[in-house]
Image (cartoon, rainbow, N blue to C red; front, top):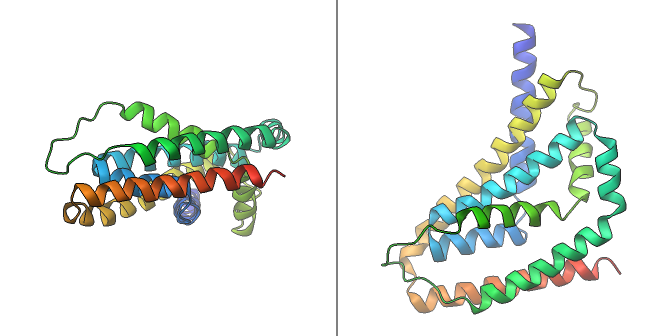
Length: 208
C-alpha cells in the first residue's frame, strides 16, 4: 500500500509537470489553435497528442537517465534546431497560403497521421526540453528515482498532463469556430502562418 501511494504521488506529479510544461503558447500551441479553428477539434487534438508524445519521449530520456541520448542531442542541438526552424518557416508559409475549409462543410480527416508525426518531429527539435524536464524533476524531488516502474509512472503522467492541456485548449478554441466565416478563417491562417514563420526565424537566429 505504501508503494502504491508513492507511485500515485509520482503519477500526479507527472501530470502536473506535463500540464505545466505544455502551457506556454509556442508554435505548437499556435498550430493547435489554428487547426482547431480551421479544421475542427479532432485536428487540434492530433497536434496536441503529437506534442504530448514528444514530451513523453524527452521525459523518458530525463527520467530513465539516458545520458548518452541526451548528450548526443545536446551536442547536435545546432543542426536539430536549424532543421526545426527551417521546417517551421516552411509550414508557416504553407499555412499562410492555405485556403480555409468552410465550417459548414464536412471535414475530410485524411492526413491525420502526417499531422501527428510532423508535430512530434517539430517538438523534438528543441533538445533543451530534456534539461528542462531534468530541472523540474529535481525541483519536485524526483531526481533520484529508483526502479523502472516509478520512472514509467512519471512519464506516463507527463503524457497525460500534456494531453490534458491540449484537450482544454482545443475545447476552449472550438467554441469560437462556428462564429467565424470563411473570411475570418482565412485571417486565422494568415495570422497563424506569420506567427509560425516568426517562431522559425527566432529558432534559427537564436543559434547565432
